[in-house]
Image 1 (tube, rainbow, N blue to C red):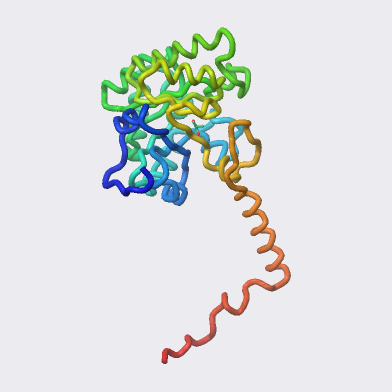
Image 2 (image 1 turned 120 degrees about the vertical axis):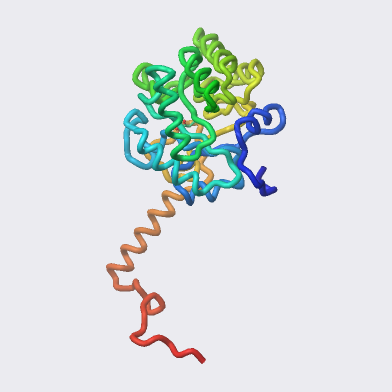
Length: 276
Ligand code: KIV
């Protein structure tokens, strides 16, 4: 998708149709400049609730609110032309009932221009997924390590090992049957990710899953080396911008203290130079 400029953004049907065609590329984004930078390279951009940890200093995604998602969703939307925008439903905004989920999903889409929502959960969320889709809201599901359930999963552990593999497969099948257009598989054994990818007809998007998933997603600040609080095994750093940024800040501080900045070329003369 990157080389040819599209007139309209990709949608849920386009993403679903990519299964078996070519790998689907995705990253998270939370701001307009990041969205602009990745628009031509990604098939969909996820406004992830990881924003709480990455940009707001929260220790988990549980404290992320609808207002935070809407603010960042609006910023990302202004930066996208071609890539589809998917937005996370934050913790507590959809689990209670399908009606609660619809009310909040509709608000997210209306106020941010997102083309779909993502929510965490498998079998237990199938009715809600069906309810949303039948009322016009495309849904991407998220199973395996679901960070909003960190307190019942015993931490950020690999999911789907041993007997749990069958449950995860059943989750994926329930999601497919409910009509989701895609499913994120986070931190699951690669053989299980491969099996799920083969068994279901909708694209699997891996993060800490398998190279054979139908697509991949990463948190952009992780892969750029901006977010360095911790580095999960599944993150590959494609740059070290955090280090570069800190070095630049240190140099600025030292130049200010040494009265080397601003230099003559950064300040203004009392009268404007005459035009010849
Ligand atoms: O919130 C997020 O960034 C996510 C991705 C890691 C899939 O859900």
